[in-house]
Image 1 (tube, rainbow, N blue to C red):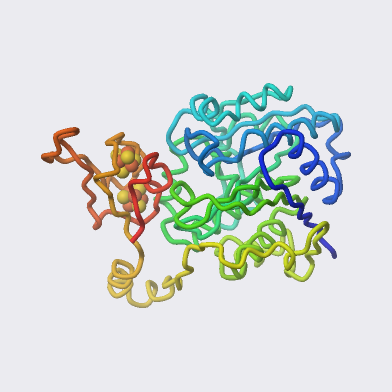
Image 2: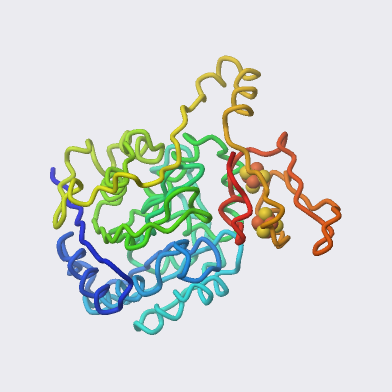
Length: 373
Ligand code: SF4
Ligand code: SF4
């Protein structure tokens, strides 16, 4: 079976250009005719409340262009996300995405309430709390931003749908699944439940280096679309230089044979991977998973983990003492302690014995004050 992924070049966030290039990408990926008369929920990445000058969220102009294409195809369009810390209405406003959605004629939705939803096809998680709007639409489309990720190496279309779980429940799942392989299996289970009909990626300005919140902008100039979410993510990994088989979410998803039996089923339309390959994209280094050692020698595993797995380190000179990292840390590993800085009189203190290295604090820090070392 051939599974199509379209790759289209788009140099900048210009409304007219984005409209044309998103149209070209979705058309090459098979078009939108099946969405006519359907209620479609678009899920952009809004990690936290930050404007489009930083490459943290899916760009509002990109989301607006996608909304217009779905509306023109005859769909009733809803869009929203659940940021890690800030309330959805605030993140929607600050990112500019809520306005872009309503300006395009679609409905903005704040993801507040989760509905306990059975997931009989899940391997590890048989129930998820999913944003209420999911029960009222016909289908979901993932609109990720191309970014690296400190814990999972790469965050694309599948990981993006973690935003369908409202608010702080996401942090609780990090605590429940602290190991990469289990966390990846949970994300794959979530995608099996949501069954996204399509993914359209904003890779115009990507984030490289220490993503997903503190990395650096990289002008990759790309838009990708596919009706197969795994195929899109595997293709993007090849473009930026990862072997997708070594990325936990993708290797787990491939093992389920739910989306693909093998990478060889993927065919590209528009540009090829070789045409657009970014040779020096700054990646998060892939580490060996020591889970098997844990089963045999739990004490040794703890020691290896504590030596080899990066810890969140706090840059007190950059920290603005907002406390977001404390709020999101479900391991209770962070607190403020007194210090003698004249401006704040307090600083963050971390208890690394409690820290499970979920990196939620790193994801939500608005001041780029946390490094994984
Ligand atoms: S300190 Fe950060 S990485 Fe450690 S458990 Fe808390 S949120 Fe996760
Ligand atoms: S480290 Fe970041 S999230 Fe934590 S208090 Fe400082 S600025 Fe806020």
